[in-house]
Image (spheres, rainbow over the protein chains, first blue to last red):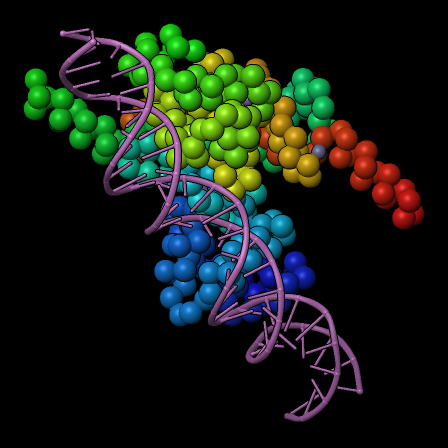
Length: 143
Length: 143
DNA sequence: AAATAAATGCGAATTATTTGCATTTAAATC
DNA sequence: GATTTAAATGCAAATAATTCGCATTTATTT
Ligand SMILES: [Mn+2]
Ligand SMILES: [Mn+2]
Ligand SMILES: [Zn+2]
Ligand SMILES: [Zn+2]
């Protein structure tokens, strides 16, 4: 992690490295609260938010919207993966194989007022198998 | 607007109708602050947030993430349009013609733990022509 | 017009994110 | 390895975003 930071012109400081490790080890995008909890030690929330912002501006991490009313972040791995989010329990699963980038130029042609597209976000909102089963069971019980 | 509300089992109250009009007349998704300002009269912020949530749950409006650290909402028109957002000035333009829904079943097959997809959000982050020109001009001045 | 559940307003509470400033620390220089 | 210095951190306090409790008002039903 230290190398990534230095290559971006950032100081490889202990809090930042710890935070990056937390993000890297997490299976789902992490929020400031989760990060604070998992970084353990003492990393101030202000430092966490400042780190999120600088790491985002250097494209080391990217922001993901899960509609939880607070931001989440994950490593910016350049593999263009996206997320499925359960609208019932909040579960998040990564998915890949989206072709959207290949359509950038077509979208740009259709757009009146945009010069470039740098990135996109694509999220799917649905119901996970666990929640679907629960609903099914509930329905059966009532009937 | 009153009809839409009643059809969803909601009371067609004055604040709600005013809010829906604001959302309908806006060219871009609106935030709670913008709504408060434009509804004029006095509609309490708590009422605005409560309305956003109930209208969202009835699928009359939908939430849009512009990465501004607060939620935005627009009418849920079922035409599957999406947004281009300028990372420099925040400008928002609607775009349509996305084929993502036709790929729901393929994504579902690829997903380990999801039973259904109900909707998706697709946002493009780029630079608008106005901002692109400004940058160009700045670069030229420096050179 | 009366009854009633739903919705609102208002104030206060949470939650989320940012800021100012004194102090510390990583990296560069000697 | 000690010195220098700009960048980064911690702490406390500020601001922004969203939610809650409860008394009062309002839209529909009767
Ligand atoms: Mn992910
Ligand atoms: Mn729109
Ligand atoms: Zn679920
Ligand atoms: Zn712009």
